[in-house]
Image (cartoon, rainbow over all chains, first blue to last red; front, side):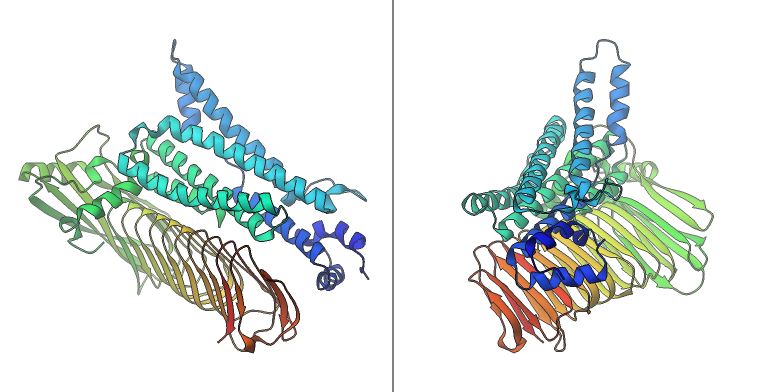
Length: 233
Length: 330
């Protein structure tokens, strides 16, 4: 019977990954009834797992590689360096996401006492910080992609995009301000992760639209953009 | 988008359409209703029939125009393709119809239709929209992609996937998986009976699901409300950033229900007999449980509330940053 936090916390990873057996699950949930700290840790782990899963690996759009290859074959073209940078950015995003995604990795090495399965306040805080860093990294690079291709945006279009982004940015600011006062606040953590995830998704949708159009496939843009927009669900 | 709406659109509508659809030039200018002296109009209608069998597929891709799909008897699908061309002169209108076409590919067990616009820089002397009006066997697996336009599906019982950049989605009579995604537009789903996944998202739009029975439900919007009404599902993950989130329905034993908002309220109305473990949190809002919930094992602070209704079982979580949480029994 798990009655102490130090007994429960090593099993939280399995619980979140739904790998815990029924008896362990029941014991942990019984412990939760009287322990807000462990319950909060589990909630954080769930959100980190969901955030990572929702972001998913970002496959560099084919158009990026096509343009990169075309630019590379053009002697004296300065543009290819730009596309190298863009492609690299997408790869970095992918790598970053995979790093965050370890909470859902089924083949992660597991040994007795492995830290993967254990949860502590410090450990979860560190995972949260890493996740936020990866989000910020992805957002920064996606914004660069959008900025590179937005010369075709009509002012009205840019305004609409800005309005959507403003909603998300306001949520990010709200959450960050709340966390600066109370770093362990659960609603603030949940909102921050969700807002960052949404921001990545909206930026991805915009990038995919641009790339679909670059391939001369405006109809395909609907599928690509909506698919990216829906990743967070 | 109703029939004839092309000539009745207000300038604000056109701007809204452009705002979403022209992101990075996703819509060819030939597909945009242009506010010029396009007094001439000509409509071309053609009907194609495809033998899909009981569970064939239909893949519809469009740029500008509505897609309407209705279940019908038999094993054949009938697709009416309506191309509406506008221009300043009759010759321009005719040219629009010549240059904007629909590519049709028939494959084993299905058909793919795709609107094709000429690759052209700058303005065209015409504007062409394409609508698909479809009657298909109920078991058809449907994929519909549109840049600008509304998509409606009625009684299609195969897997349904709808992607729209700017326009509404309305799907009724779902019996298999449903994926409905809009970048800018409202989504309405009703009469769902399936254990398969139901996933509905929009970036900018309200989402309403009504009379939903089945397995997992995932709903998400950034700017809009999420309303799930008369639901009997085994799990639900509902999120909105700048809107309210509402769940009204039953809670299955062992089910998981996560509702999250940022600035909006979370409202939960559970069926009378529901037994569940409740966990509500808000940063700056209020949490208001109805007295008839009869929660036990209550642990509460000003901004959190945990408790058990009946013997527990379903896990019900409500989180909002600045909104309120309200829960009551129906």
